[in-house]
Amino acid sequence: MIISEEYGFIFVHIPKTAGLSVTDAFGKYGRPKNRSVLRSLSRRLPFREKPAQAHFREHETASKMIAKLGRPVFDSFCSFSVVRNPFLHAVSHYEYMKQFRIASTAKKVGQMSFVEYLENRTKQPFWNQTIFSRLPDQTYFLTDDTGAVAVDHLIKFESLNSELEQLSQSLKLPEFKLQHVNKTKSQKKSLDSYYDEQAYNLVRQIYRRDFDLIGYSENLPESL
Image (cartoon, rainbow, N blue to C red; front, side):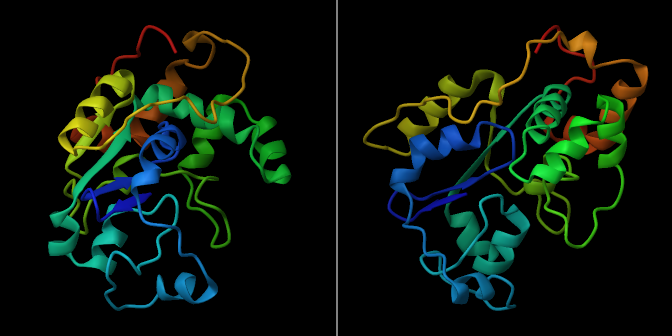
């Protein structure tokens, strides 16, 4: 995530939605990273902090930012996030987890079929599991405590460059250049090789709120 007090924006970083590319383009306009043991602990404490002091994780949710900053402060920023077609997001995350930095997790997912991976995501995570292991839907990162979308601008991954360029102009950023960073390395496969009826229905179940609130079609896209 990124907070820029100078240019008045907050970027909510959903995993596997080109977040590192966005960070590469917008991060230089944000505040310096201020992570320390004390800052990390303060994130868990129930008191408000100013944007310059508050510590957030890379993939912090909008609801937790609101709780820490206060709704008026959060709403005073232009907030944005990048969202992706759920059918493609699921495939991207599956391939990413097969190369995950925690070797035991990568090995476990690497032994799963796509359907098994999706079934695993429907289960409750263990207390000590990283959120990447059983990733929620994208809406999880975007909503407030009432379940309403709290983020101002949802940038579509499918038109990433043009929408971000338009946003950068409205924010009056001095420079905007988007590069693709951290692209998951995987063998080129067709979408049909991942999706049978069971996988299709599991994605509709896992990403139900994404289809309803973000507005993606429940029809399979033509290609990856």
